[in-house]
Each structure stands twice: as C-alpha cells, then as structure tokens.
Length: 514
Image (cartoon, rainbow, N blue to C red; front, side, top):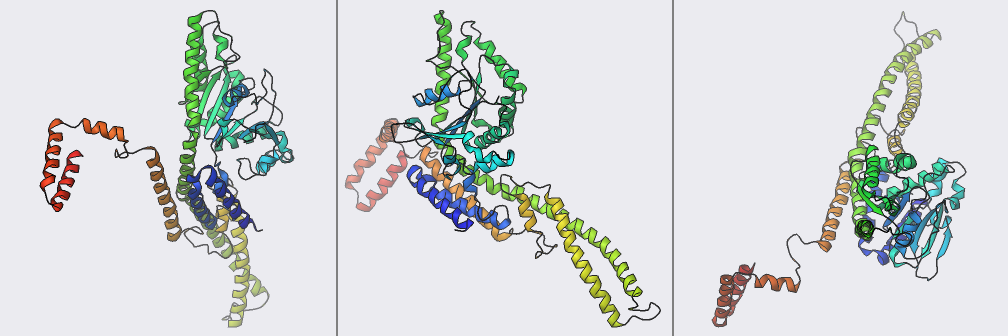
C-alpha cells in the first residue's frame, strides 16, 4: 500500500471511530482532508502526511509537575480507584496514558501500544525521541505505558499522569514528550508541592511549563495548582504560602493564569483549631469544584479546539507560510541573478579568450558565422550548467534558515519545490499557490464558520428561541393586562369572521404577542 493510501485508510478509520465516540466531528475530518490537499500542493506536507494526525481527537487532560507534588494521588482521587502508585519518592518514571475500558479489571499495556496506534496522540512518537536522543526511540517502553481502567471518569477522554521534571536521566527525551503532550492537551494541570513552593525547588518546571505557557496562544488551558496545602494548616499561613507561590510564578513572566490550592482529603490530618481547618476545607472544596468543572468541560472544548485549529492552520498557510516562501523565493532569485551577471561577464570574456587562443577567429577581421556559433554554443552550455549549479547551491543555503517542523508543515520543503529545475526563476507566485488554491482555502474557512454556527446552536440561542414550555407560559403571564385584553377581544371576534379574516387575525395576534 502506497504512503498516500495508508494515510487515507488511517483517516477513514478515524472517521469510523468518531461515528461511535463523537459523531459531530466526523465531517470535520473531511475539512482536514481538503486542507491537506492544499498544503500538499504547496509542498508544506507530503502525500503521506495529514494535519488531522497532528492533534488528539479525544479530549486530553494532562497532569504535570515536580516529583512528590501529589500528581498520582490526584489522579487516583479523580478516578475513584487506586490506579497509580503513590509515595514521597518517585515511583514511576514513565508517562502513563489512562483510557477507559469496559472490562472490570485494570490492564497495563507497553509503550508500543501507543506508539503504533494512530488513534492515540503518541503515534510514532518514537521517531521524535530518536531525533532527540539517538537509540532511545527503540526504548519507547521506558517512556510510555497505557493503563485501561473501568472508571467512568475517563470514558471518552484521555488522562495522562507524568513523571516529575527533576529527573536527570533521559531528560531530553522526557521534555520532548512533555512538549508533545502540552501541544495536544485540552487542559494542563501543573501541580506544585506546597511543602517546597520556593523557586529553587521548581526551577525546571517553571522553565518548561510556566514560561512555555506564556509563549502559547492557548495559555488559558493551564491550571496552576499548589497541592498538599494542608501541611501549612498547623502554622495557619495559607495566605502567605499562596502569595509566595504566586509571586514566584509571576517573576517568571506569568501575567495571567488560573491558580488553585488543593490537598488529598484521605491523607490530610486536621488541626485542632476547627476554625482554621474549616477555612482550609472551604478553600480546598471550592477550588476542587472549579477544577472538576474545567475537566468536565473538555468535551466541548475539544470540539471547538479542533475546529479552531483547522481555521488557524488555514490562516497560517495564507498569512505566514506563503509570505515566508515568497520572501525566500525573492531572495533566492535576487542572489542567483546577481551571481549569474558576474559569472556571465567573466564567462563571456573567458570564452572569447579561449576561442581566440584556439584560432577560431581573428580579431583583426570580421568573425565568421561558424566562429560565432561555436562561441555562442560554448558560452550557453557552460553558462546554463553554472546557472543551475548556482540555483541549487543558493537554494540550499537559504533553505537551511527555514523551518522544517512549523505548525503548518515543512516551510523548507515548500520553498525547495519552487527551485526545481523545471520551474522558472521568474515565477512570482509560490508553487501551488494561486486564485484557485485561494478559493479552496476560503471554502475551508467558510465550512468552518458554518460548522461553528451549527455547534453554537446546540449550546445557545442569541435570538431567544427554543424556550421551554414553562418559560413560554411564564412569558405569557407577564404580558401587560391591556395587551392580554386586546388578544382576548381579537380571539372573540374571530368566531364571527370569515376564514380568510381568521388567518389575518391570527397573524396579528402572534405579532402582538411577540
């Protein structure tokens, strides 16, 4: 099976699964297919690649943080079962992808189950690990595992529990996977240990999570949680610790974000002062409720995020990729033409000198047509050979400065497509880009707008339509007495009116009600 056929088969399987899990997204896959064709024509994607494989089609919640921050305990509490091992020391140095299973027992599957299944967000992640650390891609089981659980909390979702960020071994690979997870997640819970909230203890986490969050356009999906805050109840310094923690985050450049405090009810030891402890309980319960509300909302967030990602890709192709390719193409053409002019001048002089030395003509007499033809052929052959050599060298030099893994695809690959031997250096527009491509891109954006509007109709009604019967009855009872009297009088008059007049009166009555 050819690479493009494999990708088509993979997307067909995705749509089959979505029909069961989330039917509303089935048609969105077709829009991704359309955008893929545009990107492939430009050269941003290969025929074996698709934007649809770069996102998670299932809502994904990730739990990140330092060692001993209580990540696994939080996961167990959320699931309502003891799935993850807990303790003060690191008990698991792998990312655990938690999914739903109808079976009553929990099953643990190796990392290859994720790396080899295109339905999960870690498909072929071993290749990315291999690029970071040679030889580590084959050890995917050292980095990932999957646990299938009967907990209803993860039905239709994917939950990820991560190792801490303080590990020195395999550090680059772990951070690579972490960045991969963050990019795909709908919600990122970043847990800190209230027993060690000072900046020094969470320096790595701040660097790779907090600062990274501020560079993203979806930073609102990050929730920063100070866990195990119950340990401060004895000293009754909740406000001071929280203030110090938030200040540490702000100093890293965090200007906005959602901050919460939490502790594990099963492990907490209440203090004797009931008033103090009640304050901690109230704060914890309120924040935990907000966190759970955000988690429950990822189903809806995922649908909007997928369509938003599609629209963003369409805009980035037009507003970022095409300008970059065009600018690189113009720079390439300018450099080649300048070098051609220099080489051409030198070559012309060299050709005249060489042919004269060979006695092909005498400068004291008018050169013969045969001499001119030979000189022209020599000049043309050498110049053309040098021209295409220069084209390739200059193109490669410029390509080295272009991205190979941008959000919209391989900018370098798309640029090099414009420098192929069969394309004229004087073509202004990038390969695959024109009015027809632009129209297709607009069609994709239009389809997205229609889809979002249909999606909005499921959750809201700006026009006030779709009220239930109780609301309608209440609205009727709230009408002014005079207005109701007019309606009643019109209703009585309809008994003596003609059928045609009845229709008119009925319309007028509806208009009065509105």
